[in-house]
Length: 114
Length: 113
Image (cartoon, rainbow over all chains, first blue to last red; front, side):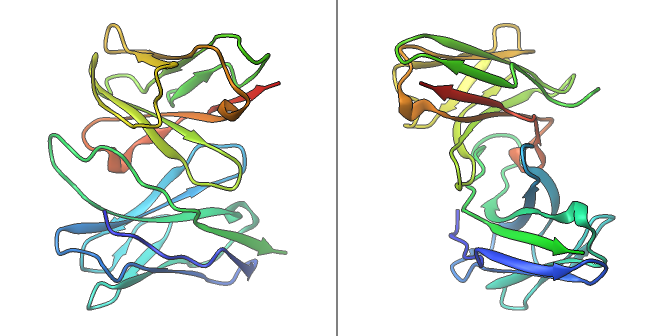
């Protein structure tokens, strides 16, 4: 799986959009970008994933650059409950077997400020 | 609660003792994963089961570690002769399909004194 680079920490004011960058310049054509977050004392939680196109769900939006070498996770209206460590993971998805491990880096510690 | 359940949530043990953790995955999830997380680091993959078969093990899983999933439902992770370096959060996850959208439990925090 391709290596990712994320800033170690970020702050965001409550109610504003939180934009979390991730660099994955060595990404391969068949690798997806996944985002997870881990709130203190809990297990990681899946947020969103994408291959090429921008994606949106009820939690967040994912913007992937055209060259796919970087992406941004957007939390549109951050709340205090969004304070967590956010992990960007790039991996190949094999439908039925293989590559079953998620490789987490150290992530970005996002702090939402009241 | 229909999420992944881990027991116990916290365990303090003396060095050299054996410990066993249990994970109950989401019902009908055929894949189950164990991860370890130390302070300030992201989770690290330990092992993975598809039903009762253990299909992948990390080299982090030394001979002192053993995991089982006897009937393809719950799983146990045993650590024999614990060492202080085993102190960590042990996370279990389950999925129906690939690892990518796995659901994680809240973990078991192990402290070896």
